Each structure stands twice: as C-alpha cells, then as structure tokens.
Amino acid sequence: MEIEARKLSEQEFHNKREQDRLKMTEKEFNAKYPNKGFYAVTGKSKAYLASWLKQHCKGKAVLDYCCGLGGNSLRFAQYDAAEVYGIDISD
Image (tube, rainbow, N blue to C red; front, side):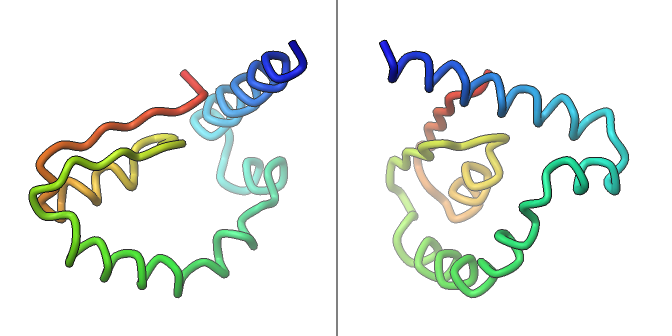
C-alpha cells in the first residue's frame, strides 16, 4: 500500500509540474522548481549519451523508461531506432 501511495504522489507532482510549466513564466517556474542546476551539470553526460546512441540505436527497439514529455524518445527516433516505446508515471 505504501508503494502505491508513493506512485500516486509522484504522478500528482509531475502532472502539476507540467501544468505549472505551461501556465507560468519561466522565471516563476524556475523559482518554484529550482532544480535547473542539476540539469546544467549533466551536459557532458548528455554528449556522451548522444554519441553512444548514434552508434547503437539504428534498427533497434528502444524503451524510454520515465520518458516525461518524450524528449529522449524523439532523439532515439532521430538516431534511426526502429521502434521507440515511452512510459512514464505521469499522465
């Protein structure tokens, strides 16, 4: 039961965050969700991942777990993945 409550809490948070992203200014959104610093330090990881995906995705079936809005799913398709499946806890 505890795990189900946690899943619902996560789902509600991410759904609300996306609603806020669509209706708030960028400044308001960043003030309410100040985790941009985390994403700023992931640049090298993203560059490595992009290079790896370009070499290994072509013709493959790819699962984008925790896909969010599907940004990575689109990248997989751009790297010629044969099939891309995305799942996320939020609606």
